[in-house]
Length: 98
Image 1: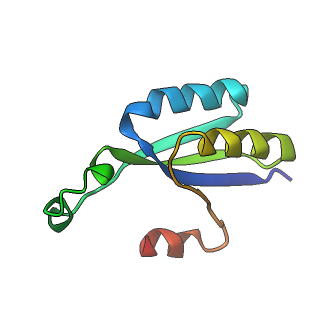
Image 2: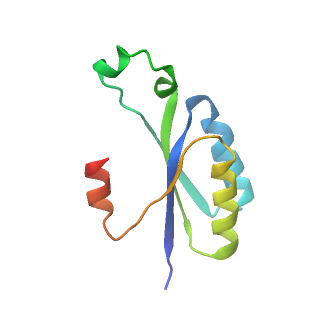
């Protein structure tokens, strides 16, 4: 049975292409990444927090295995953003509460 693993996190929007290319090359096309813009509320903009404005959320899908998990985790950690392992058991609850 094929087991899929999910990793998510945040990176700067300007590094999307480099992140996607590096993941594709390091995993030989066995990892798929999707990017989502961070929706910033107006009251957060009043605080003038520039660190949120130029970031996006990513979600990486890959086959679970020790080699691939190690490679993807190292690449995600090298981009100076937050990295989270997504639990698939209650993924709908996590998305709604985020």
